[in-house]
Length: 280
Image (cartoon, rainbow, N blue to C red; front, side, top):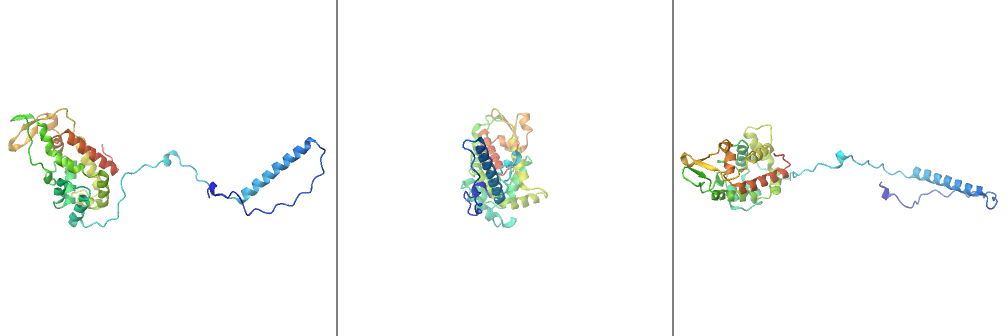
């Protein structure tokens, strides 16, 4: 019982004790009269206190928590909601419906129209974490135009080429990260299964997400548009030896332009925060 719950008045008090016969009167003005009255008041107060303590038994108050346990570490990761997951081989329809409810971006709709959504998303994430360009699983996101440079054999990248990736960036960032985090924890068992199929039997898909974000985040910042060298087959390579030594997906990430990189990394880091994943 809390202290505020203790009654202010008690109805179960014992009957008052019989009156004490009056003592012989003391001489008027005698100092012992006040001494005796004071002693009686002290004794009566002590008896009353003992009686109250013997009757009232409030619950022992819980000691305040120490500084180490008083403030719990907040967890951003949402709790899984009850959902009937289909088998991985038959999960396209369910995942397509769930993701489509988060965004109506047309490029995202094209991606959702493909098959084997969970496995392709898992493969793309693993390939990015390994430094590879996920050209096959994300083929539908490939721009229709080509890179342009200010030159023939070599030249600085035309900044207008960055706009080739504006639509893909907008498709990703059109999804609210907390909403996707909730969808992911609801369907994580499917992604974990697809991740195990790729040769990771003892780890969850969270690991792949962290590696992919860290790989993209390690792409260096460049002060100006990179110079590209034209190769056979319409391919390009960075002229700068340091940029040429980057992982393929990092070199591709540079070609998306600083604005798109900033938007994508900001979105990915917020997604990691919403899942309580620790990234670099």
